[in-house]
Length: 196
Image 1 (cartoon, rainbow, N blue to C red):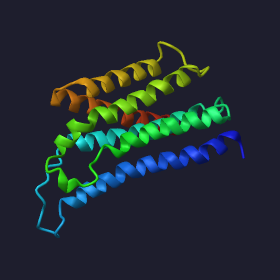
Image 2: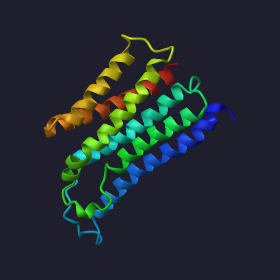
Image 3: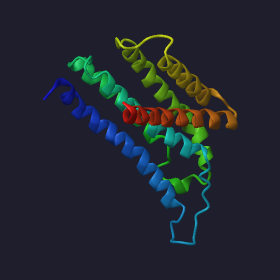
């Protein structure tokens, strides 16, 4: 077993729990729309904000998992790495657990839930990525002025807008941009793998 495989047994498990937390929140919310069977929809307005936040968190966790793999050869094995990974995963887990309410029926308008908790969710993601950014930048293959640098700046800019803006359309636009950015990176990876 390599040192990265040893580290990733812990981190992979924690990251899997984070994904399950968001997905189970989504499933709970969808189920709450029909608590008494088909045709008896509950009076719950899910809206767009909470699902957009959930989609962003899922994609961001997936991207973070990929970033860990990208620097796996340079990660040292030690208590500091294990502790740092647990703190980062714990930060993401907290963010993921705040995306959807535990009892969706208690929140007739999920937009209210979103406005109450979005800063906690996005603040945790910003904090985790701010801590992670120096690791990515210290990678020998990283160069300023590359599309990767622009991508990182665009990511942080949209994340800050979604975090601080009070205007619904700006927050929705920023979350949509973040989601589309993640999806575009996935398409680029897929196409480059096919052509290379």
